[in-house]
Length: 150
Ligand code: ACO
Image 1 (cartoon, rainbow, N blue to C red):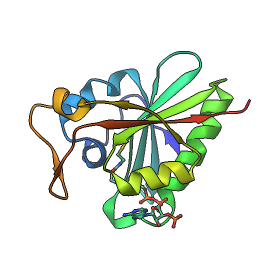
Image 2 (cartoon, protein in one colour; image 1 turned 30 degrees about the vertical axis):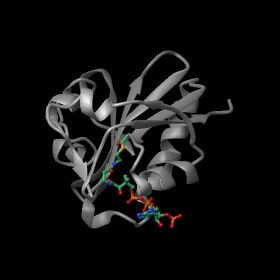
Image 3 (cartoon, rainbow, N blue to C red; image 1 turned 90 degrees about the vertical axis):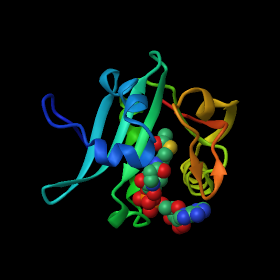
Image 4 (cartoon, rainbow, N blue to C red; image 1 turned 45 degrees about the vertical axis):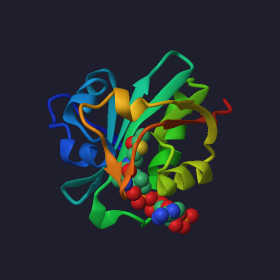
């Protein structure tokens, strides 16, 4: 993963795989560090790190181009993120995902994240319209935490 340089276009197309609305992305993107993964000249992965305080970084978004999913890239990005956060002296990473998002919950748990909290009705109160995935309305956000040993 390399950090996106100032002035480079923000890969909104990829970010919209992870977040439903541009307005939601714009609430965190300008205060975050954006890391990307490239294949040739194309950006195929993105990971957005938002510093909550000196000890905690939230992964606000992680996404891999659909053509490259399920090939281990997401897992590798989570590992690299932990290394980068540790180097900055950060003690914990957090990541939020719908409580119904089976694949994401599985990946995060396999990467060492544990259930920590639930933000009730997050996807109802923070978005302009109801969001459905596989016919199920998204309501609550699971907050997962990975503690980093320095
Ligand atoms: N249920 C459980 N596990 C699953 C499922 C499923 N339905 N589908 C795949 N998996 C497992 C695979 O078996 C694999 O695990 P394994 O390596 O132990 O076999 C793992 O999920 C996939 O790992 P990767 O290949 O490393 O993941 P990928 O490169 O596809 O990246 C990501 C994962 C980022 C979630 C990607 O699929 C993506 O971009 N999805 C769309 C955007 C998204 O949902 N982003 C996260 C939103 S939350 C947030 O951004 C904070």
